[in-house]
Image 1: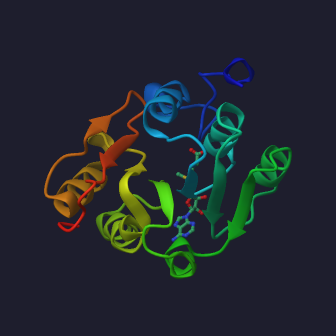
Image 2: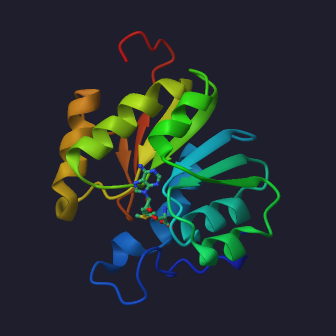
Image 3: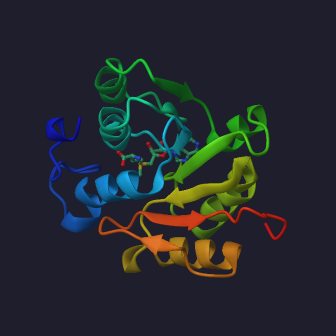
Length: 179
Ligand SMILES: C[S@@+](CC[C@H](N)C(=O)[O-])C[C@H]1O[C@@H](n2cnc3c(N)ncnc32)[C@H](O)[C@@H]1O
């Protein structure tokens, strides 16, 4: 429920040099604008579980998988109340092999922010998204130029939309032969 979410809650650090990019408010806008009803949503990068818990509170209708290679006890306790969230502790690139092409509605990429990590995540995960779905992620802004370059190079275009927290979204064409 939206009223249970503090839009100023930091996603990464308690003391933050990039406030707008680390708060939940832009992410809430992203979820409200981009995520289809009763969809299957995969988050790459759970960390403390802040973005995933906000998503689960906002959208109990979704089936949510969040993936991180590190065990984080804070994430485990934050996410345990949500029966629609599955936490996978593994490498997100490996986990892509368990998902069929076109099986999910949204992927949200928030793992490492260097060019090759973002590119590899896109290469493995973009085909998993159904035509008409959304490939998305975090940190599309000037402090993370490699995210901008990788996303723009991969789609040969900038994302369809960028939100106040630097969440970005690419709308997969209904006719997806180009990807
Ligand atoms: C930026 S944090 C995620 C923040 C979280 N989405 C939020 O906003 O609350 C990035 C996380 O990605 C994880 N990570 C990085 N590369 C990964 C990979 N290849 N597979 C799985 N997890 C990865 C790190 O362990 C870290 O916890």
